[in-house]
Length: 520
Image: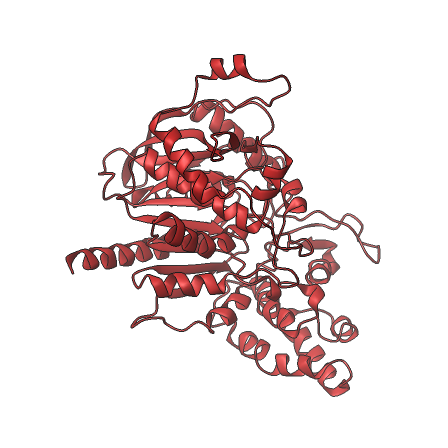
């Protein structure tokens, strides 16, 4: 899970460091092995230079799971990206899990990245798909929950090796090349170039170029997915067999509530209706058909009529109250346009609780219930920070024997604040890159997944966007699945199980398409 933050759009970034070219320097470094022993680096480090990350730690484990036992090798370490002169620019940390009883040449490998920008990969690693899991299921999350991991029965390691990437500024990863280098990495384009260089370097160093390659990205990591796929295709000569985009952003225009665009309200309404339904039982797409049909039909039409049309305002105010369970007086005062922050506070006002923007079915106490307006921490995002951070540090240190110095950044808001979005006045979007990657590779598959009660990246926004993308071939290779839960629906047992089944089916289809292409 990861926080989506977008600062005001800045001028387009001119990248003087071409990381695709820098990848050539990375390859030269790879051929020579690790650069220096840590002791040598410390002796030659100029005064004031930051402590470098330790060398790789390789450990072997036996994981007992229901009806099966997995033998695996875990590697925790970092790769150093350099410029064309060989000067270190950034250390990118990673954790890789590989099955011991498989052929690396045919074994799939999946790269995993979270979002933010500024989030480490611990969310996907320890809450969703890694070999071990931190249990955080339930109606509330406690910051003092014990950071104890259990074997993850829904790990993807059964059918793919896993490489979790921490971009610079997240986890233990760091920029070591100065402020100008930091500006490049903390930008939409520079970030993608850095990730492409990392993927290429890892595949070469580990002799995995022949392996089928996949990518899973969550939230802003899902935004990265199509951009990275196209970058790898065009610049690095590496093709991905499939993308799994978890609670992704595809077009920031659809999430910007400040734009007053009617479609932003229409995109959120089904998730608000899902939050109301969830209080009475499980949520399904079938149960939300009326809400979806209304959101992209009569609701959108009446929103377009504007607040000057009193009859339209009365119609939508009444219907929004019915769908969301909010007070009719409130929906009328807001003209049927409910922003996320208002919904969080008003959904359970009678019980003096606020719901999470990341999962509106998870609530916490309102710290100031009698105030007209209140500041409150998110009951999901903030509450999980302490146990997940502690669990990841303990996992790295004790289980994986990787002892890095310095702060571990689970969610680094300084990265988000410094992010350079580029694009002038146009909000970032990746649907062009998504269509281009699918059109260029007729075998590629893309699975977009969401939780019903996620108000940060509402599922219906991407449903409407994906409806605009043609099949780009004889079959539909782009699909959307929605599960019970919110932004990190995978914290719920049933949703995590369904998610794994859908992903394994996607992998099977992608590998079958790859095998058929090889036969042809």
